[in-house]
Length: 563
Image 1 (cartoon, rainbow, N blue to C red):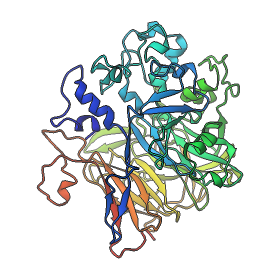
Image 2 (image 1 turned 120 degrees about the horizontal axis):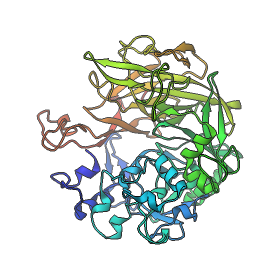
Image 3 (image 1 turned 180 degrees about the vertical axis):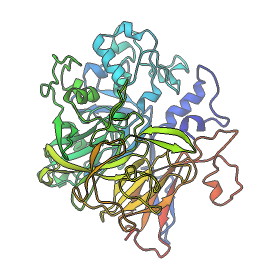
Image 4 (image 1 turned 30 degrees about the vertical axis):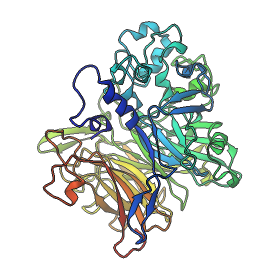
């Protein structure tokens, strides 16, 4: 169950307007928790250290500062911060990231969920503003599913409406939408520090932010995905060069490495090559004279990174989610969860539909029980690339598709990676490399749940170019990696019904693995629950409400995991 429904004992009070006391709880329930945990003397049991000075909440109401090119720009000015240098809150956070200097990155994904915009608001906007708002899904008349803006006249509530109500941006929250969709840096070791929203890394539905290995005297490079159908993969290359002396310097280091640099978007070519296209004002058509959108300055480019990607012709992907960098060879992997907007290569696309391409090659119909339930690319795939010269700051790369999600019994032109009953999966989402180079894959699926639940797999990856050319279902040629085998990809665990397996971390000694089970029984309700997990772990007849939880995994012999 979501935090929204879970904060009232009997669920959310029905109606077109919200109850203030419920919304207040929800605002403070959204966000990020920092907790100190301690391992017990036996070496396996963990517990939260109550009263730790590090324990805190970063919520939808927490004050935050901006860094980078959009800081102080008119696009970020609101009643709360008339000079556009600050805001409040982080929302709908998804994947995460970390920095070489020891801070945590949280990523604002479905931030449109919390913001409404009044009908008729277009009449009070410039044509340019309307283009930008529409591209990010904030159309006029859009009501947030949370309806936080309807709970009262207090600033805590009205700030969730991106409607023009005052004489200027300093008198209302017309720009509040622009204050979300950023990478947010939190210093877990400085409990009184103010989180930073780093605008240089672009604004979109961030699924996460993953660094390459930091090398002295070289830029720090981060990879990011925009979790939206037909959107893009990005990377950021810092202007500052890495100095290990910055470890532990918190936001001082964050500003040094993440407020100045170059933002790029990926273009995948059909021959297995690729280009990182620079998103810098004045280059590649990103100017005030552009016919699609008139970019005024670099603040405009990063705030509307999706529009910049459109202009430079970036490759539209099948929902980029988590990324990971192989610590052994530096190659980069990213999950492409699925895309129902792909249509047959022989069809005429309409609206947001797209034909397949080499990097997103599949169109097929998923048949279950004699009826067509899903079309497009319902099972997803994992793409990977190797930067030219193994230099993360390079502007060209080579790529292939590491694995295609599929059911083991699917036709060969769907099950392109040769998955079997021990490793078939669908809709890859979470992705993480441990220090030994083991790749952990997590799923968030709706296409294969008639047979199994969402899962986590362990994989020993090869390298870009270890496979061959092939033709996918629908007739589109592509480039795939070596087929999976029982020795290279295996299912590690399966979660409870209607959950998502997400988040993964391992202790430095590799003896404890942490994963999260999110929204078990999500299709149920208070009166008709579909799961009682985790209470059902110890009482199979339990009728308690399902709860998201962190699972701690150790080996029975106390040894290292996955060796």
